[in-house]
Image 1 (spheres, helix red, strand yellow):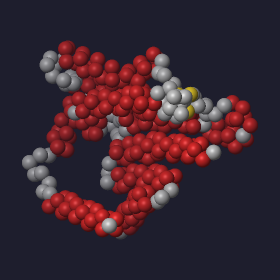
Image 2 (image 1 turned 90 degrees about the vertical axis):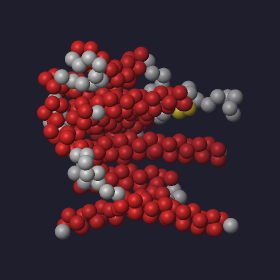
Image 3 (image 1 turned 90 degrees about the horizontal axis):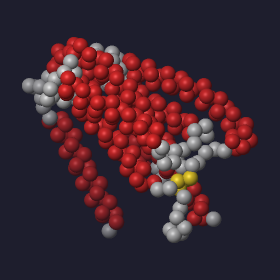
Image 4 (image 1 turned 180 degrees about the vertical axis):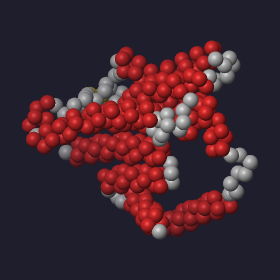
Length: 235
Length: 85
């Protein structure tokens, strides 16, 4: 019976897979929409010279705005789920008693400043080459995870007001810029930067986003890395 | 020609790591293979001339997700030990 069921599942998924492959092969590339051409002709007005950044933060800015909100919501979901946690940290005596951890600590102390530098570079380079706030934020977050794993940075418990501010800072900057642009430059239009100051505004938003995305992505790890304090009632 | 060979090797390694990651009964192996898969995927994105996605894949797909999954595996192992003792 079970074998029959397995065979049925395999056959069904094989059919599904083959249909998908067939559909992709049959799919005609759209002939009347030339998105990349449109982007390239409008690139001068976007304030940046890298087409991907131009799309993400200028032409489809609201998309990115919502994306940041989704990430923030994901973190809020985690915070709502985890409950009370004990801060876990490799204690100082453990770190000092294990010679091999000295190597790790030394490496982390060398690498983390470099990672911050790389994040800054990625942020800056996003204007004209592959890079940008998401990648820079991810590198910052990775630095945070590394610090936590090597025991330098304790895991996060309840976010204090400064951490909360940091988590929403990028979104706030984004919304403020959007509101200011909507009132001052192009009334009634969302995120239509005036071409003259677009580059500066995008950099401003990306700086805020880098900080907040770094904190949010690191938070996904650091809030969870504490040890759960189990309720006595549950046991 | 050498590009074609490289691409073929990449595709084979990608599919292999994906399959192994799904098939292996050991959770730790599965997570490590998932990270390997993410890194290979990043190289594939570079080969497809999409360095932006490659950066994001390497940092978030392989790095952060991998770290989270490893943390989860560690937590599960701890639970298991506690329930055994």
